[in-house]
Image (cartoon, rainbow, N blue to C red):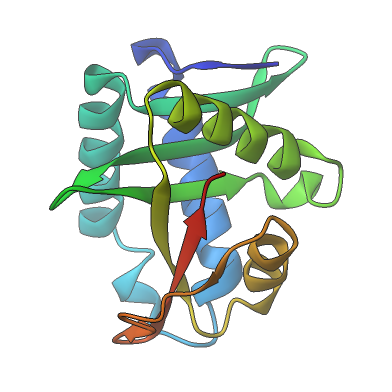
Length: 154
């Protein structure tokens, strides 16, 4: 089931995000850049704000949050700011279902273009996004150590 996140989901979302982030950053970045108390507090505050604005979707299975996505507009362009699935549940269709819910939400609000940034070493996520139709952004193909992808919604 995909639903809007509520404040009671915050702990589960923060834990899922920390685990997912560690799965792709570990070995490529210093741990303190993604796995420190200060970084966890910063990310938790971001999720809390997103939940408060109503821009966070959760994938739920048997009462547990197993996926999460957050999107919002930046400078007039919709951005998929966060998209994570519990690493223990990869390849189970959760990401595809969550992505479809994001698409449906964007279509309902008339969004025609979405962008995202994906860590250059996260080839698993890059493959997922490619299967969903995302392409390199021709206007800004990368920012720092992240690739920029764009999805045109038909």
